View: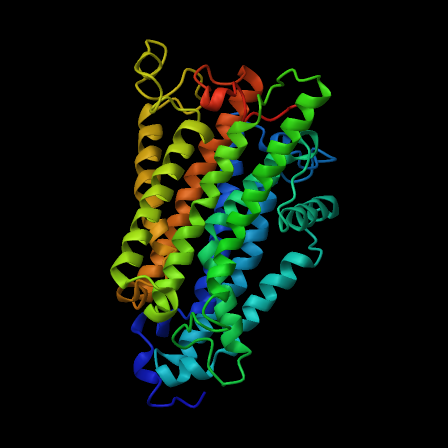
Length: 413
């Protein structure tokens, strides 16, 4: 780009400092650091995350721990990112024309990010790299390992992808603009209609589709297990809890679809008024946010906040929590509940590209994406702790959703 005067004013101040490709890279690297912190702290409180996700054990005590290996990968990716950013800022100095012209720098880093992950690194074991790539390949089509082969790890990774749904959409936008035949700079104002009005919304839907398919696989496994047992209900009951979980992920689709329709609104083709579409979208947002928040607290974390009063109030544990806890400060659980409630709602709004009055504030979108990574980071602590408690203490006493006493419990055999 040569700094077309018609284009330069559209480039907001935030994008001149941190263009879209850099924002995507930053959030990806931030997620790796967050996972390392998850592994580190959980190991300190004696929760063996690698055993839960069936990750290959260290072959020698001299090998670095899992969290240290994660930190090394994060450092390997952070160093060139910092250098690239410093060089980009030194060259462009916030000038719109220079920012548009030097799009090659952030895109070179995105290429390094992909190569660095796929290529064998000296500090990443061959078995660990192979396991990670095979997991990504399996879950990319919604596949799910058996319990003894790492099902919980598949679910954790697929759930993490749902938090990166908008980031994946922005990654496609950046690449689409870079390779566009119209000579649009990928460091310019993001064109979220690049590739077609519904391509980005579809990409945002993909992580939820992956988890939806995994839930249906679990349901079918439960049904087959019951048939093999001669109709006797197994540990997963009749599998209804998996259908309820699938419904949670399906509830994200109306939010995304209605958002896309409002962004490219055409009353003659749709046949619904603008006000009607907005009300439908708002209802979809409320249902998705409320259902997701309930599931996080009651099912993923086994807390009793939504349980009957007799279970919610107990001398054995603080109000709304549970008996067995590895985080001994109750305030941490209440803070996690509050964070999850607020950010579940804002995340639903962020999935909505029709909010042009907000989407024009690229800094606001980036902040919401960072906050979602933070919410997922907090969620992982309690989700892994809950799974550890289930495997060592049994299912929660109030786990009675749809009659399944342990429908979300995974084997540790």
